[in-house]
Amino acid sequence: MGSIVIAQDKPPLKVVINKALAAAERQSLLMAKKYEDQQGRLPRTFENGKDVSSDSRWWCSGFFPGVLWYLYENNKSAELLRYAKLYTARVEREKYTTDNHDVGFMLYCSFGNGLRLTGEPAYNDVLLTGAKSLATRYQPQVGLIRSWDHNKKLWQYPVIIDNIMNLELLLWASKYSGDPVFKQIAISHADKTMQHHFRPNYSSYHVVSYDTISGQPHLKQTHQGYANESAWSRGQAWGLYGYTYLYRETREQRYLEQANKIAAFIINHPRMPKDYIPYWDFDAPQIPNTTRDASAAALIASALIELSDYVDQPLSRKYRSVVEVQIRTLASPEYTAAAGENGDFILKHSTGAFPMKSEVDVPLTYADYYYLEALTRMKNKK
Image (tube, rainbow, N blue to C red; front, side, top):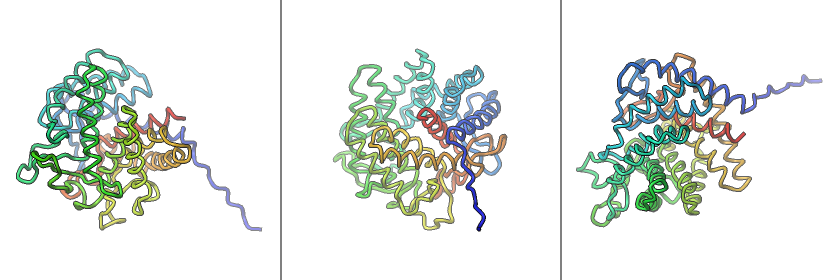
């Protein structure tokens, strides 16, 4: 008789998640202590063996405070609460920012989570002021929030797919203040993005620039992806996440359909690896000999967990099964850094802007944020 090989059982997902949260807390407390006395500084990445930080002006400034809030949600320790408040306060001045579209990222990930978990009344005022600042970037004749103000020789009115993420702040502001204008801006932006940013296969362009007179696109291209017609992985993830929460907040069926079609494009893509951690661009010619993007995977995971609540059972199971593979992979030593390594970031192997050779195969603060959000969401499902 041949010998019987007994497959080694994988630990239950709940065990994986709890271990991952404990490891994330250890690492993030090291990070919090490192920057505690560096007035106004926030972690950005760890590149070429060096810590890279920013002040609150960098678009990622709200993510580390958000990491701390998610850790606090899972372990109500006084230490985590103190650090979450400390780093959140470092971002407050961005409530007056009107020269870029990233106010939603900056404030909703930090103050938004803080408000959700503590009910701190002052956080309402910060968020509402920030929403008013963000709304100044909306021009009715175009119907979208302008993303960037630079490169004016090329772009008249550039809108990037990432901008879909900032609408959540406006939807919150509309509910909180009772002012319907915030919601009207968000809906207009979401609908025009759906109309002009997506190809027939539900992949998205990175940048669409609009003619300011006609309100129609005059240019569709990429900035961080491989090519104008390629599918930049994190861009696809922004779209998936955006239309998922847009459905949650509005219950408009068209947003649910959009989210499901984007999910199908991502999950079923022939160049999506078996572990569902995408390469930095689905069309990068060097695949499989090129870098992955853990930040895109974390975003996809977080979005699919939520989206699984809004669909029928077979599709829900499919989404959850993809997420389980992603979480087990990201929580493994292949992607999770050992304590004290990786500049005290949680995840390894993210890609910021490959064509610019910027932040390639490094940790990124937003990868950690959406990973913790995914872990927390999945833990709450179990």
